[in-house]
Length: 353
Image 1 (cartoon, rainbow, N blue to C red):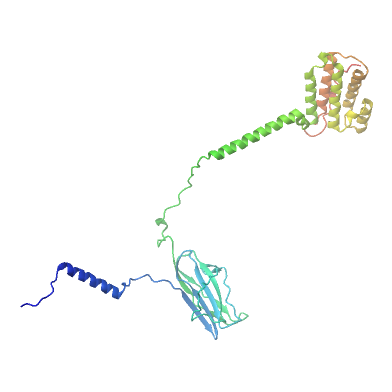
Image 2: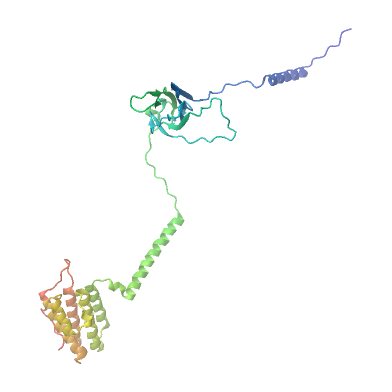
């Protein structure tokens, strides 16, 4: 009689093999895979008696522009401070490192610095690539040029370029020319500019008409131009043709007197004809030819205004022409002098006497 032996089937064998492999992996743990080595930094130390100078760099492999934290520590002395680095150290730019914030559960390390140590931290950056050296750090141990010093060994740093290993300019694309970028049409901005321009134009136009309506625009004109405009307005009224000779002479003499006040600074509107003529001779602001002309003009006008003389239309036109001629020839010329011309009396028309 044959003994009973367990039967082996193919599915059960496969399951047994898988279970055994799982148990083996669980017992051995995950397989170790190679990982890139991390840059843990480097330290350089120099000693003299009980004074120790230690320089630590937190890494020795960086990319261009990546900062390196450099700590300079002096221990064993309470009187010697760490050396102060300049703004540049070899190929590196130096600046104070930002303070590191300690965590709440931070515990003192076994190799913590003794109380007599002092540390200064800096941040170093460089734009050079390749093997770049952090120069030795020197610490004077006393005053004077002959005092002993401590100096650490230089630190070699591998600086990787951001553009790769190639240094051949032909491997890089050349700089392209200037490209004009199309400016999108801004409807709101265009409408705002148009509204501002239209508002400014309407404001200027309104100011022009208001100044002209109130007479302030004429007030800004020179005395001779303003007088010529007032004489033109008087002529447009056609007072002599309407038989209003007295009103015409009142207005024409007022225009001439106001012009004299503005042009020569004489108080012509407030003076009688004899007083004005005496003032003109005394001030010598008006030439002799002009004084003679004005004397005849004003005396003749006084006969019309106060003496009851009735002039003709032609005589009124002659008086208007004489007033214009006086204003035109007594106006300032380009060099600022008075235009006193001897031709003023030539062909002079006398007002009615």
